[in-house]
Amino acid sequence: MRAVIQRVSRASVTVDSEITGQIGTGVLIFLGIHKDDDEKEIKWMVKKIINLRIFEDDDGKMNRSLIDTNGAMLVVSQFTLYGDCRKGRRPGYSGAAPPETANTLYQQFIEAVRQKNISVASGRFQAHMDVELINDGPVTLLLDSSKTF
Image (cartoon, rainbow, N blue to C red; front, side, top):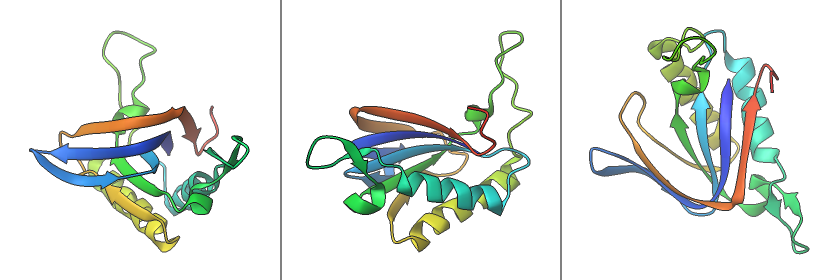
């Protein structure tokens, strides 16, 4: 499982001119599901993201987590995080989970965040989405549950 984490002042996702999810202060998560992922990766990823100390404390140091700040999370599925661009000119997606599996794990990820009492919004799986955000900082981080980076 891979995630691009962006600390935001606000973010929203729109599908067919309808806002499907929006948040104020918090994190925007672009989430990619690998074909071998299961609940173990969900638990690890959720715990890691909600506890990352990426929000400033009173001294201006990144020392507070999403939990500490009562921030929100916007989750957008993005299979292209498993795009392999090492050969040729067209990315290969053989590492990405098939849509049925990916959607199940994507929904489980969102529910796992809710279970941690984090306000969570989402995009629409397999839809063409327009994502708007104000990146705060900017702060952008990459996570990979297999720890390849």
